[in-house]
Image (cartoon, rainbow, N blue to C red; front, top):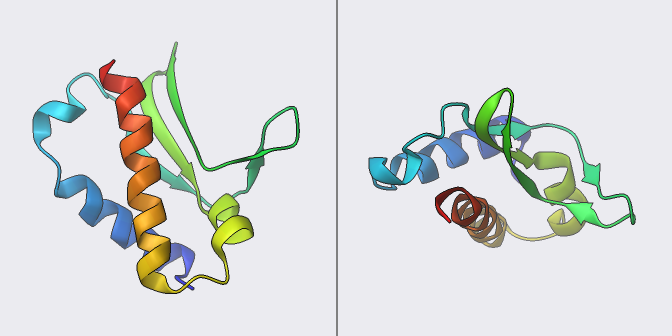
Length: 94
């Protein structure tokens, strides 16, 4: 299981591997948050795309990944992190 710090470095690498144009107008960037987040219905939330008065930004929730994927090997955890990043970026570019 990746630590919060290790997951942050991995996320930085995942972001850097993508073309710059994907991040156009994503003025708040991509952040890894240590907390676990749940929706109003109680479902675990892995990430959120925001477009509000603070700007446009993405938050991925490390604690949520740990709750869902804590027993997975690092490679699988990284794949899930990448998939969630791509999902949230899709909201941004649509």
